Length: 248
Image (tube, rainbow, N blue to C red; front, side, top):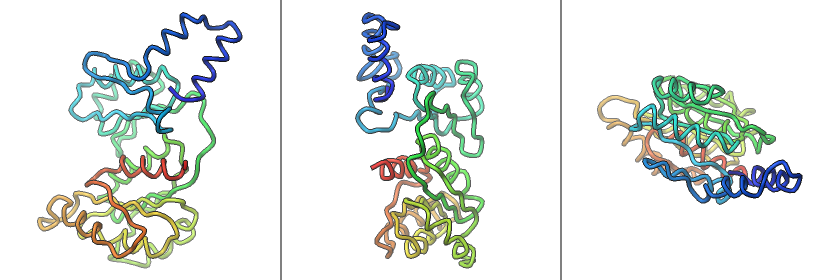
């Protein structure tokens, strides 16, 4: 439930379109709705300005669909990350307007009354192998109300590639950089932009990459002071932080 939806509810009561009893029923779901297997935080948009997001991994398709449908009733954007095709099939049956972003593994539903974009970010990935994580970040950011520029396959093995993107980078209020292997790209980008850089280590690389641990440690030791780091493969977390920073 968003500030706009509550205002619409109050105006609906004032105009007589909604009875106080119906309004009370809708407000009774605040601060959360207990489904028995989940407690849906409808109040999060009011507290944080951004909605709760469904982590689909580990949930059954039916559970994902039930949570998604209940959240869709509030009228705001709904996002489910790490979702497979089975979960999408169940969600699509319950919420026909839902869309599936296969590379990102994200199911999304745009807000019924979308607001103007809050600002522009860039999502950069070092290699094509990093695309699933980068797309999770880009798609999530889009549903959270940001304009997103995507820059793909510009890793440090060919620095001329990222240097050619200076115009795009200069427009971004936040830059998300996804990289595996040694994780060097965020430091390079951090030295090029006057904006926060959110580094996302990916689980890409040969054995000594240790499933993204090498990239994580490299990013944590960045010499660029505008670089901060989220967890391995956490494109969603990077997008959420970026959205909060831009909206502030």
